[in-house]
Image 1: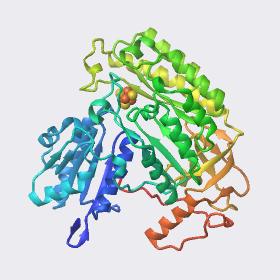
Image 2: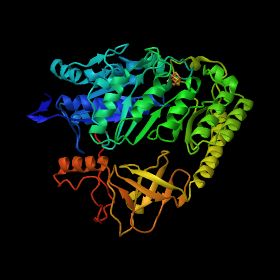
Image 3: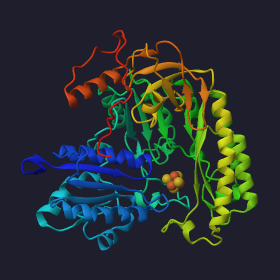
Image 4: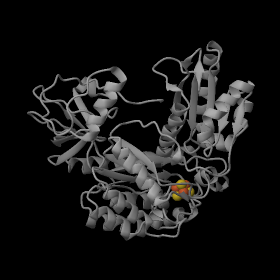
Length: 499
Ligand code: SF4
């Protein structure tokens, strides 16, 4: 049991990087809580865990900058411990202890379950602990989880990746793809739903190659359909698929399973076939566009997003023009755009013809301008549509100032909606029906007159229960009860933990 003078030790998890890391951080928080730690509530935590990412630019600088700051904090707080995990830890191993000897524990992407033991051992032996496994022996989803929200959860279906994209560090850090058995995945989804969640996102580096390990090429579409049959699960999302392995059975499963949401994240990376080849991405732009066409025939309202890298080594102006052409044709609802930068340890890092920063920057700006125009045009088409918004916490940074609440529509577009003075106030996890009245570049606005149409959900009830447990307020009526006017309270408390 982790205690200080009979009080439980507190922890804080800081997360960098992708959704996979956010999910891993939930596992880390869950492991620590199972071992008796409690989340720090604003005060300096006894244990600070940094879950690192090696994919993004400047990850090293950011980590060592943070560790430099924490060295001073640790001097002021005797007994404090610092742990560094995740992809950068897997890559740098003992370099972290050489550069920051005040770190207590370094653990790899496959060692999340060992964190409490490593912390205890470091305290007991008064010596830094480092544990990096090269492969996975316990699937991370079998670790306990401390979820970030009551209404929504992440479920890993696979970890690792069998592809070898030349810009990507994931295969060497996360290893070969490992798939969870469908029964385990479905049991975890059911457990989340039993806890009050109405939305799940299935996670994997390459979700549609799910099944490769147990020899079922259609395993992902079957999993979507099976998850779709789980009662009271209202929204299913997934990320990320790979265009090379994206097959029509997945499109059919999406279209025919009502609770699979009309949203798809489909990473393009480049519109140039020559660059795609150099990236070792085995699809070509025509195949990519063909997938989007087929998705839109079956799911006309699908919002499709993407990832694009600008300035891959050797990218010519002609190659970049191909990217612009494919982006123009693809009509993405949004895009995550990246400037290529060298990731040590990846094949692309040593390729000739690395482009000057100024060239990459200039192309990047042209791409952003194009995508911003398309996003604005696609958003403008949403005005007048009626959407169902799952009310969220923490999505609308300016909600207090604008007197709005926020959430995601079915297609995952962010919607900020006003709560008229005569309206009941939905809880996080409830669903409101609103009409989109205005489109902004990165979100939609729904300022409707009259009381909001609110559907009180089990997830909203779960949020009430969590609030009642954390601050002693009585639990209100369950879903289905009339939503009578309540005082407007727009500064909704956040359920974020351990961040
Ligand atoms: S598909 Fe490519 S980019 Fe995605 S994780 Fe695998 S190697 Fe990395």
